Image (cartoon, rainbow, N blue to C red):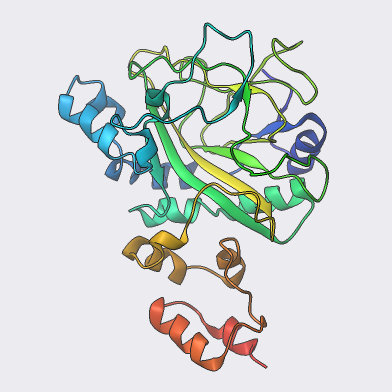
Length: 312
């Protein structure tokens, strides 16, 4: 078992700060994961359906990828900086099939995207209270779709300027495991901060469902192939940055903010939860009586009292 895994939040946060990555075991309770995953099949064919050989299941997997860059008709350019010397491992568009963008059809999956345990861990690791969620999507893989072996790389496609890797400036990338990610179903291989490929020691970021792999942009890592017969792997991308760090980004949420799934999700949110997406907190000069009324009208059922109580 890799030493950089822990169920202790304090220890895991320290590992992320000093080693560049950690796996927080059981960060989200298994029963909450399992309840949300029951609704995952609104977006993906179930593993048994996919591996039955059904052509319609494969086609559904391809077309349900709502990030259109990764559909079969698209040819995305390399997303990351990769290591020379990994010529036997290649990036391919098929490796990135199965990206479903937030918000989802499922309310439970939407709530899972901002689970308080994950948010609290990010705040502790980044030593900050005012964070923004900037990447939110689900990624599914099945054995046999393609060879998922990748070269070691760093995720430099999250920022338009060079990364400043130090307290107060770093961002946190992460995968919440929706299924058990073990040998045979593609656990990420990762190196400690300061190691570069081929690396002194390669770690496997395996974990049970409900675990959270958190890493930094200066850490070398790679995807590995799914070899388990009938295997699959599902995870949720959850990445955070400090507020007002506009040079960091990945997913845009505003484009879906007038759709049903977002409206239902937003109505369930507290001010602190909506602030993860950039909404002004109560007491901000943006808010007026008329705008609080409009907020209540737009998101039927939302508890608008904190915004109203924050009015001058």
